[in-house]
Image 1 (cartoon, rainbow, N blue to C red):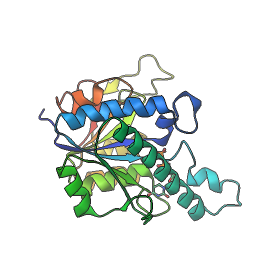
Image 2 (cartoon, helix red, strand yellow):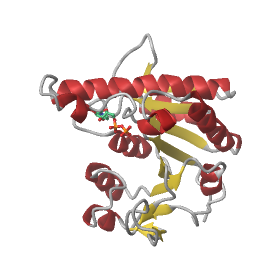
Image 3 (cartoon, rainbow, N blue to C red):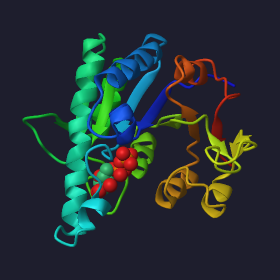
Image 4 (cartoon, protein in one colour):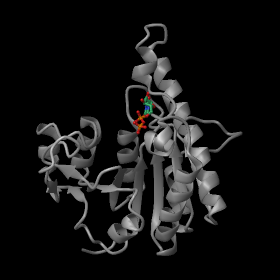
Length: 239
Ligand code: UDP
């Protein structure tokens, strides 16, 4: 398998929280920075999308009935900006050149998303962190990540998770759960494989964007997959 030249890595907000389950764990940030640096030093162009679940999700914010779903989603998108700024700091601290581009204009804090500008940054070896999701309520950051991956012409979206990939059954509950090395988009949509929400998978399918699901906590794993093209310990969703 050939190496990927330009990728989009999607981290969930929860991943940043570490053991605490809330907020941002600086040790996790340092670890992620090390993993991303390996990619950048390998000449790979890296875009990043981070969720906001470690701070707030629109659906949960709206559950009380006091906050409208659209407002909850605005709060969720702002949470992703908080995470993006933290990630930018961690990557810069580790010596990388980084830009944050937000889907919602906030010029005192970061750039606004512009495809051409994002691509230019990537070509120059800068990591681009795409913040504020798609800028619209009722979407997820998985969909935002897929959308940005397609827009920047990434070779794949990497969904960085706590597990190795997609299993035939829940590996937390069943000891004999098997890792599926390849799943089609239709299987992912119809077999209720919760790898990403349906909107994200449908968008990836329409644009033939491979989705790679892998364990982000295994040191060197991202590099092995992206630079070495070694897909033996992860799952890929494609046709
Ligand atoms: N969100 C949104 N539009 C988007 C992306 C995200 O409204 O395009 C909001 C939504 O409320 C979501 C929250 O931002 O719950 C955080 O994103 P997500 O739940 O995808 O984060 P993750 O689960 O990856 O941490």
